[in-house]
Image (cartoon, rainbow, N blue to C red):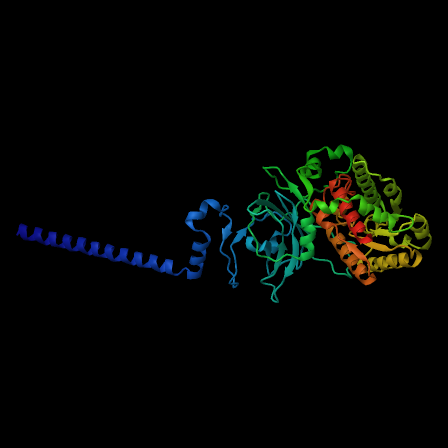
Length: 495
């Protein structure tokens, strides 16, 4: 009896153990099948793209991949995206979905949220590292606002290098031509950087076609750093209450206003032969007119600085030629530079032109008026429609009252750094980069409508737009490089 009962217990235990083992075996098979399904659920084209883009044998030759992802795109030619980390404390961060770098297209795209405060924000972006480059923005907006993108293009970078990225927000919305922007405030200069402090990209060869004019200018010269350990070049600005000398030494002011950040960069001419004039070319310039060649820079203090740069460039050139035993007396007497000081367009009338231009024998006039019209002296800025009307009159008056002037050239208006008056709210100085860009757009239109030349020097000035020591004048290498570029263009045109 006891043996029969023991046998029954043994059979029950055996059956339970056998059933458990069968269940475990079936469950393991299900897990293996599920793993297969999970792998197969990955779209084949993305698997192939990942395998083709990151072959194991080439990993050691590729930049860090920690910021890369495969974009969701309908474009068959889509490339890998490099995620650029955002500053979550920036003023406009709630309007931005993501920031990505498309290295093959040399673009940085800012994806905007559909429900946002700022419909068309104004941005300014700079790449720093081995060289300096400004991002050129275009808006790619959809009809339903859920796929709005701001494209920031760059070009002529060094390939296979690390570049730091800084993007700042200037205004919530772009200004229209008829807008009265007098009371519109900049985004807080101390909190306007939408990229993280360590934001950077890695550059590769691009298939993007470059604009021919910009390509020519950028290849003519570029801001280069030869330092092996580059640091980010953050925007220099003047916080509030940092104007007085005793305030400027405070750490909160000194760090934001220091110009030491620009020291690693120097402008290098890629086509240096264009900056070297020989004796024959300069004598041709003298002999072009019976009284020689006189070039006037019409405007206020920025043009005074420009003339000072010209005189120094010319003096250096004459010394070089004299050291080579060349006779330069005819050239010294036959080429002159003059400053025709005017603050506002309405001053450029008959008597002014006679005294400042005709009496000095100027046969070429470089015009740059915009600092006072957008600045603080009158308490109000000149709005865009009025500025265009005024500048059309300036060109017309020169053509009417000084017909001996053979060449009228409009020069791009200079940026100035964001000083305390520009950055305060409401502003008392309106020379923000956006207003200057709009002024220069007007000048292009004026030049075209008046059939005169427009010289854009922003490929030199813009990368160091915040560098003037006195918050206004380019008495530095940027100004000297610009002066040489303008002078070369003028000489080429006159000859």
